[in-house]
Length: 315
Image (cartoon, rainbow, N blue to C red; front, side, top):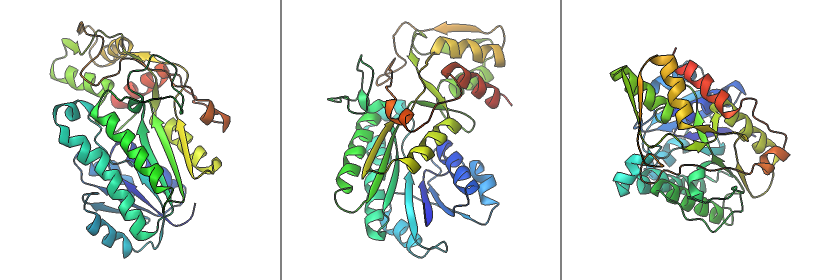
């Protein structure tokens, strides 16, 4: 990897951990975030160093972003890590404009910027939500795909736009389909939401759905391990990977562990539906042969990742 790195969504949960990792590797990084979901405090360590610059701005303002990067002090940009997106799937279900603007158009705008500045490489954060509700183990070539949420639909559209760009001006692209990613600095998700509810009322925890939702959870640091390994070891024009461990965790397990940690004795109240909201996929399983063939294995099981995150968020 050569040249500076441009990270969209840099102040978000995963984006800020990515910035820290890139700086630890000695890279110069320019991060952009509109701070709608991201937090400047997530970048406190990065902002204290000489090799990171932060731009508070809108990725979709292509002209302004292009001008800022064209005259940047770190010189030519070698690659983009595009993480800017709407991460609140429930909000996207309520408002059809959110995922169009924040999930798809941010990708479209990032590709326009890359073409204008001749940036050759792109790393993209995709999601299991592109697969929809398929009752089969999910491989990278599983299809046809019918997403169950606007978020998943706009991520799938983003993947298509990236694939087209590799035929024109992007030399190499990596697409990573995330599972449920957890860890410190999270702004959403079951663990975060349960802790927030218990802070408001430590006597009871209301759970959306029946608690039987069962999905793989992966700690953010292990996700980054996988992404950097695949970035180094795979060399096609377009490289696509499911990233996950083999195990999974139920929402019931998360609720019980959060209550034990944050509010022992709190009553857990489950719903009756098999999912938490419209667009929620209650269970899925990845096939991860491709990423494993490169030598990656998560050190933590899904339950262990949940337990570690509960401890981190409780500090």
